[in-house]
Length: 208
Image 1 (cartoon, one colour):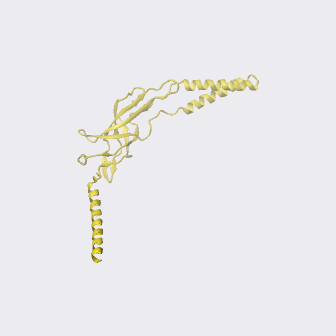
Image 2: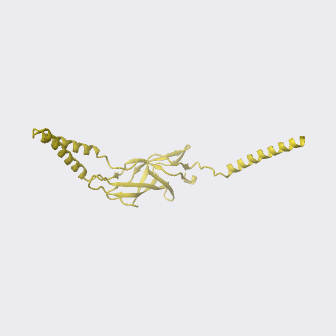
Image 3: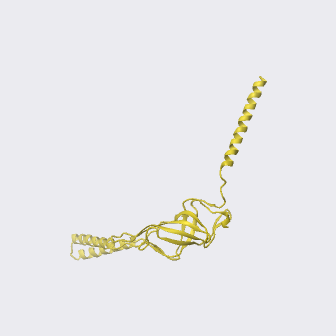
């Protein structure tokens, strides 16, 4: 009986020891996370170097922005103020008649900490680049001409005239509002905005 108990105890000890060994082996096999890694979602405040505009910018045109504030991670300065980031136009099209605004889509592909080395990154604007809203103009134009049409119709001294006048005025306002050319999209020279990393970026220690 003692032999059986001893065997069972030895078997349990062996099993526990094996599990501990495998756990440590698994941990040691995992790569150590570099303190120089900037995780996805990191925001970087930048300043535009030269204006880009949906009216003239086209696919694969390049531009640069400069870092406005140092980016820190665990107390270490990862990206210094003044570092250069290269941007690229993904899509660019001019504004068109019918109230269609221009389109400007960009991404950011390289980070330059000095003149010699470029670090590949995958980043985009933190906020969508869009033309100024023209909703107020459209509402004001349609409302104004609707009211004017109603006044003209009321001069006909009939309820139907007022309704018809308002309808004509509103229709004219819609034609004017939507018949205008949309607005082009731009990022002006020296304009500040934020970009955000889509994927982790690892910066080599030798750069600091």
